[in-house]
Length: 200
Figure 1 (cartoon, rainbow, N blue to C red):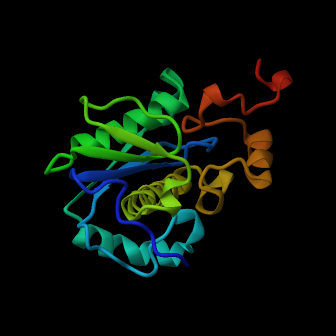
Figure 2 (figure 1 turned 30 degrees about the horizontal axis):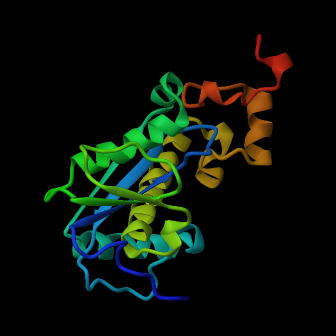
Figure 3 (figure 1 turned 180 degrees about the vertical axis):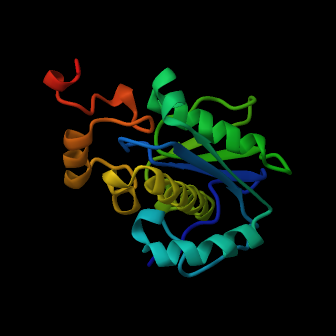
């Protein structure tokens, strides 16, 4: 596993940002912002999608303890439907940045879309969570927070199997939707149902 670079630039206090759950059919989208010390290193740290659930969970307390600042935020399915998933995901990142103390002076963002935050310079980086430690750390905090949330929602709506699919559109989840219909936690703006069922 190649060693990640700690941050995108070295002059300003930098936060890494990432989101989790953008492509899901159900549940909130989560985002995290993390400011790491410049000398932070952990051999297991990587893009959350490249790690097992056990590895991600093991890294959470390590990241939180080592970080200069960290924060997690979410937008609900209802809030996603009220705007759109891109705006909701970016708002989530802004909400997580709001919570940082000290405040970031530069923002490194996973992906290719971001709205300027409080006139603070930023850089979008495609697959940044596999290149920079602070973005990787944010991806892990966002992913684990969202997975935990979906486990709780699973107890309320066990028919959809969210303990396993976490709200993604797996075959089992789609089959459950066909059988039980959509619930409050589904994103109605996602055109999940076939057109002939949407009038029910």
